[in-house]
Image (cartoon, rainbow over the protein chains, first blue to last red):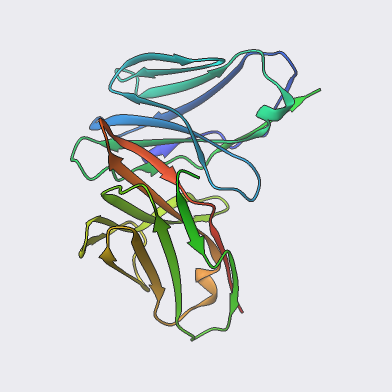
Length: 112
Length: 114
């Protein structure tokens, strides 16, 4: 079993829909959680980052962390065709090395 | 790309030849990382550095070595390239300012070993 699990998709939604992307993990020591967006043949772009539990909102994006369930989510409101990309989650413990374990990514398609 | 450049951006090489990839940052970040990205595996850490001349192994370090002689440069060397090292290689940086755990990626190097 991988430390971080992420559904590869593809996930297809109509423009304007609310998108929910999720990752589960097994290591209870994870404290830092990231979400990246990656367009084809580009480097990952940091979208959201959170420390420990709770919610964080930035524009159309909301990141949630539920440490009791070892589950993190990224919500995208009013999705746009430009949101079509692969979304990666990443997690690290608090050892101070910031060595992240990545999910394999979920491919999202937003249809116009 | 947060002040990170990688060179070369594309490279085709033959099995058994040495290859060096370069990562250069202008952000003065303390930590630098090399990852490879392969279908079905996602991003996997090869090596990382927590300061000049301070490096450590990641998850998939066999066949790779690194060096960091200056804060801004982190080199990844494939001593004798194999076809299994065909991949996209990404450099990342973190560790600056009040939020040290954010990690930013470079544009990637696409390496093909024939």
